[in-house]
Image (cartoon, helix red, strand yellow):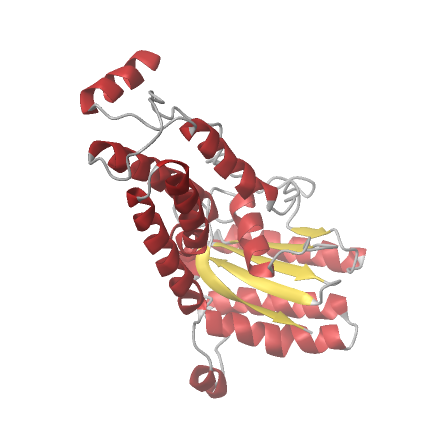
Amino acid sequence: MNSKLKFINSKFNFKLPKGWLFVLVLLQFLTGLSSFPVPQLERRVMDHAGILSEATITKLESDLKQFEADTSNQIAVYTTPSLHEENIEEVAIEIFDEWKLGQKNKNNGVLLLIAPNERKMRIEVGRGLEGALTDIQAKQIIRNEIRPSFKSGDMDGGVTAGVNSIMAAIRGEYAPSEDDVATNRDNSFSDVAPSGLVGGIFTFISMFIPAFGGLVFTIVGLFVLYPLLVFIFGGTAALFVAIFLFILVMILKRIFGFGQGGGGSGGGFYSGGGWSSGGDSWSSGGTDSWSGGGGDSAGGGASGDW
């Protein structure tokens, strides 16, 4: 492997600045620093916040297992005691992509995330189901099916109604009302596009800034660009894309002489870091064991509170 990397380095005659490996490790560290502590996926319904009765959990588990057997779609419910001061949309993506809900080639998973202490909830949809469970439908399910029960203190009823409506929407049996169609639209892209544009500009400008200042601009640009990458590629793939863009910027700076004015020969090429994308296989298992099938998010969804 080392000989191949040296060959690549000599073939294209580029050198990365000193500290490039440190910056890559720092990127991974800072990304992980703000990560939500995603628990291991064990069941279809994981009530870590303790808001559901055992009878409700058992019934939901049975219904979701049968729904998966009938349709191959995977739906998971997770209640968390805390969002750890993170945005619920980001937490939902982290959990979804870590659990890899849905089958790998179909991306047909759905996550219902509930944070009772913050009084927030989120329906996160795999990209393979974005046509069957639209953002408008997800928003209507939260507003009309889940929120009324939660506001009255009936957590069991709210989660059950939400799960049943999600399954109905995927089957084509749950349609948004005319008011929903007229007054709602998907704001997901418009929310991340401006920051993505700024991040892209910062990353581009960083090629013309020498030495440490250029590295700082590159890191800042990629962090601002990251939410847009998540929207396009999904959480796990977005991290790899960000790392690739960083390496590409460093290569371009050396090949075309952009931003030269410091730094020595770092040599070499990044040979890997140990990020894992999880397994490609899935199993519905028994009642005590269950795992995702290799899918990812990026299909949209909706958030709400009560």
